[in-house]
Image 1 (cartoon, rainbow, N blue to C red):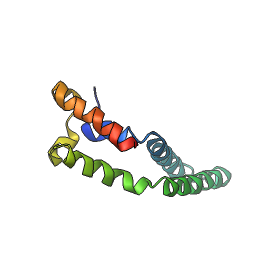
Image 2: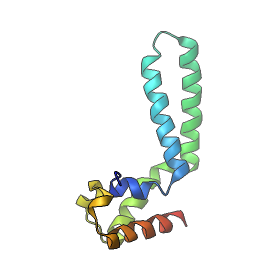
Image 3: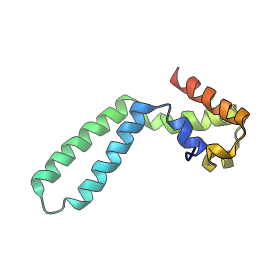
Image 4: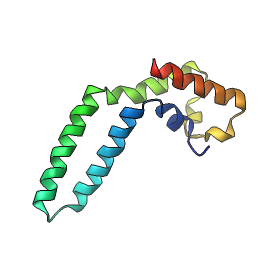
Length: 104
């Protein structure tokens, strides 16, 4: 697996991650849409809508929940950026259980 531990646990928040990815894409598009005011207006409207959706699903709390769970599962803060594949199957099972716990 090419995901880090944090990315793997964050994947439990599918809707939230889709919103975050879309926000990042729209933000990049806004940086390039300097001349086209109509396009920029549409992108700003979409960005506003995505921001409201992000607030509705508590996107700000996702990272805090993942960090807390990592500690509860006995992952060290340094493990956050390690690749899933570098862990034993037992630790990978902990990650899977963590994803389940994050979904409830």
